[in-house]
Length: 74
Figure (cartoon, rainbow, N blue to C red):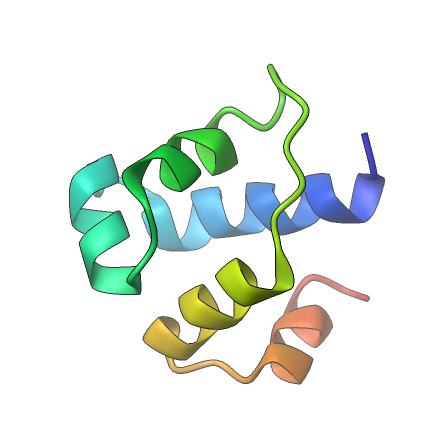
């Protein structure tokens, strides 16, 4: 698995999904609930988050995509 992809998913899970239900996060970020499960289970499965999904999540969180990569140290 791509290390950057894993860092992206771990950051989203730890900082934004946190204690939210999969459904609540999916609705709030305009993504599929299955995608939320994949992000949360990144250690157990091979999932590559798409740029479109990442843009939706960043937009919903009020973060520019370029700033997101700075936040995760890329």
